[in-house]
Length: 360
Image (tube, rainbow, N blue to C red):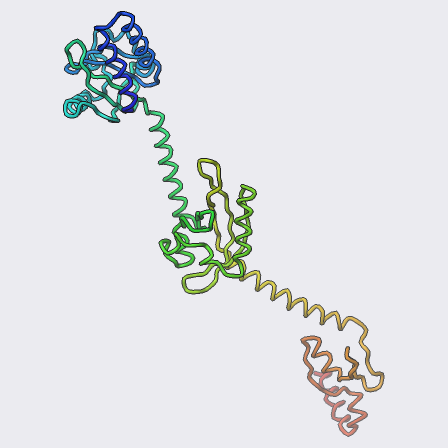
């Protein structure tokens, strides 16, 4: 703001100095002054120091405040109430009296229609016709303030999201050094975030997984797009390894060059454990299925002794073969025909027990 105000001051001072020169030189200086005075987008005012009388304003003043030159003729800045707080002008005057200039002071101003706007003011003192005047430049920064407020709101929402996310949110340099990790890192992995930032991700990733992680990050740089779904193990503070799945997007500098990564990592240790348990169960079921299928095939059995020949060509008892290929267990007894053949002396007693059971 100071260079701009200085330009206006220089141009006006040039007019004053050339009053004693030829009319042609004075006219040329005035032309330069008017060009500078009216071209800029900022409101420029020349006002009398002691009362704020409006000596001159530029075109931008009309645009910013809504007042025409005709409407402000013969009035002061206090008359048209562009100072929302009249005491603010006193602050500017005090600063000018003390230092001879003021730089980028922010105040709330009021337009003709009553709407208010944020403005920053830079000013210097000049002398016109023996009286001290102020030449000031005021820039409307209302849109900037709205943008800053929107940014603050956005940052606050982002902060709340980061601090309350169940996933780890992180950023890395292009070399893989942590710039930032969210508090969830500490919750899931134990390390304080201060022990993580500034260190390479390789210090925390399982050595066997580092090559795949490097390929993953290179693919983000080469494609310039988001990459998803890499799974790798990350070291807990207690030394245990936890499984994470990550997604990453590139971030760029002002020249458009990729200088790092933003990423989100989710803990999938529980899922990995369940997958391993499921694989073990499937393997057990597959083995059992294969053994059951063996019994469904043709089983070579001796017609005389009833032994079964196994896959290696050995003959073994039926009990041993069936027990080895199924979960069945055997208990032994003797059927009536075998009792009659082997132990005929017990047949009368066996038949008596049988008849008694039928009667009951």
